[in-house]
Length: 291
Length: 296
Image (cartoon, rainbow over all chains, first blue to last red; front, side, top):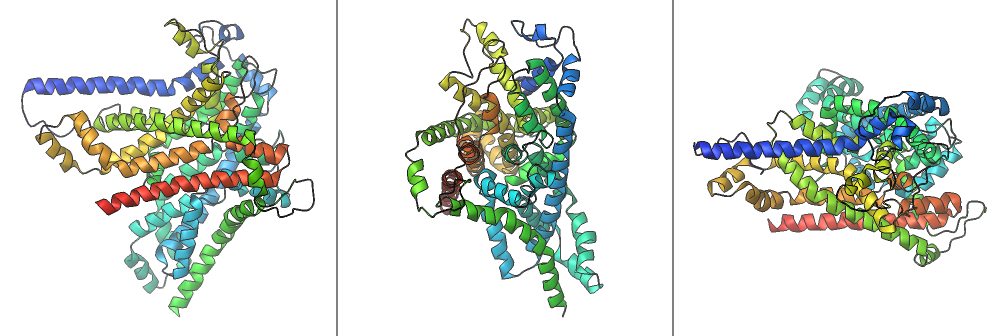
């Protein structure tokens, strides 16, 4: 199964070839079906957003709305500050991405290119804490945010997502592999300052790694749940995930409105992902190279 | 002179990041360990040291055991469902890399992994809905009686496992694809010349060669499943027309103890147990990897 399809068959018999083609078609058919099944729950959710209340409770459930309506969308936008929650999430994710990119780029560069023993120890500590899940230490972190008086604010949210151990690791690996020492030395001999070297030589060489990290960081914050749930507890400060999760527990909420709200959230983030797929896959695949 | 300048730059450049890192990672991790051996009820001013009393109480707490049991069932259920599926699907996608649909395969499998947790969980909540959900409608076509997916104790765990596996699959597939791409081609050529069929070379060559990847993906999947929370929060909460049975998981129990019962020290001891589980899993991964390295 794992034989690459480009390897030419050693026998020229057409029967063998035909059998091989049929197998490939069967595999394609299966994978297409499987792929559709994977996205079907989300597609059905989006379809529900456009159904009338009668259709939503009809049995058996329909897949494509019979008379599409925008009532659910307008109702949910009137009932909830959905756009504000989306803005909160967007601002949180964007600021977190910027912070993670900045801290990872600088720390990754220094840890990758400067040879001091103390830096190795620092790197080991960063690696070791990467194993610890956020959920383990979020309660003390909550009290730290509280002592700063930053509960229910964007800044409070941000504190949990300023650094990413994996990001520092990823950039360090990239610095070691794709920033040649000779280039840095040549620049130093030419009299370039360290800051200039970092911004005009190192950062451009890290463009693709930073791109992958940016997508990872953005989606990590965008889909965060437990942390915003405890830190941002006023209706105005909810992120979209928390806002939606609490909205769905309300008693006057029906499936149409919920689906509409979900669709409004899903469509931009899934679209963004499809556009940035290459970056994202690269970033996630990088996490597998930890060993 | 130049050396000194470089050293100064290195220190100045890394210091801000280190300070942030120290403040948002090292301090809270230290605090959670410290709090776990103190009694702190949030409202009271003093935090007396009580040794392992929190842990003693925790291990006698039936709610904690229920949470630990549910979380473990979910984590291992997700593992058993995700890893074999990911292996087969990634092998098939890799085999069809040249197909014009290859981009679609990768994207469609991965979308659930990046879709926002809460909307995705809502989609499944509707699918599992006992009265209106398409799952019961589908099963009905085969004459199977409607099931109370989100209400029955066993079925609600199964529902959560399905939802979490659906989300975890894409990540595992991407990592396996990287693994497949790094396997030496010559091995498969040799196997094919020796007359091995495709499934044979999958079973006898790819699988053993991908063992480190399997270990890595398994640990990542297990660790993230042990931290399951949002999915349970949505699937198992009450909403109109969809009654849910609360499934107690570790993170939920921990947050409840800290913020509803105001027992922060007690919740901290629970976090330490979660940390211990994660460390043990990681340790097992490293030991197995080292064994493999020693043998080859």
